[in-house]
Length: 217
Image (cartoon, rainbow, N blue to C red; front, side, top):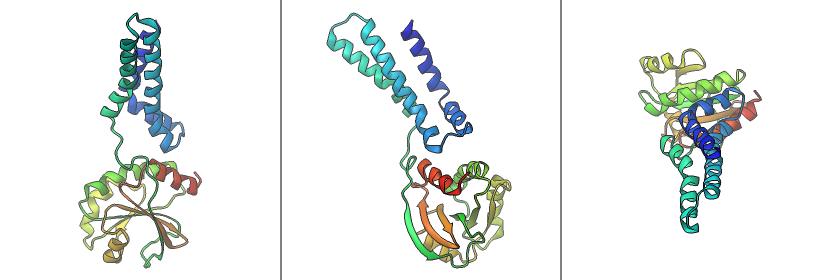
């Protein structure tokens, strides 16, 4: 009975992987825990399946160990295949900055996101930023587009839907240098200064937790 129960639980944990992640997140868990726990759950369930199988089947020891190891790895392997962990997903380390804001920002403390028009990665980042804004009402977020054409804001504005500010850069060349021409770039602003920068691949769940910790939800 145990192996049937564990198999069913494992199947459900794989099938509802994202739902588990978002349920934890909506219950107030950190970005990192919400991301990690579904993977850890499948590792634990794989271990329970492997132990139960090892104890319940009558085979040569080598075969029992082989099947048990395969069963141990299978749930995590399926979860990883369906929901890959990309480079930077758990990252938080960016680059320390110590420079003035070139009078670019309109917020004293918060997060500036430096973007360019028609950038799929910039557009994709809006989802994370909207969730960040909803969870942290006192966090100021500014989405700045390095362009002189106000029409380049339209698509971004529609997706942002008023959850945080969006505008054109005052000096797009200077901001592009701050971003090191890798967009989007996420820049922490403290006391009107650029203090820290993450590239898109560095802005993982641990970086988001760091921002929330500093903001104080």
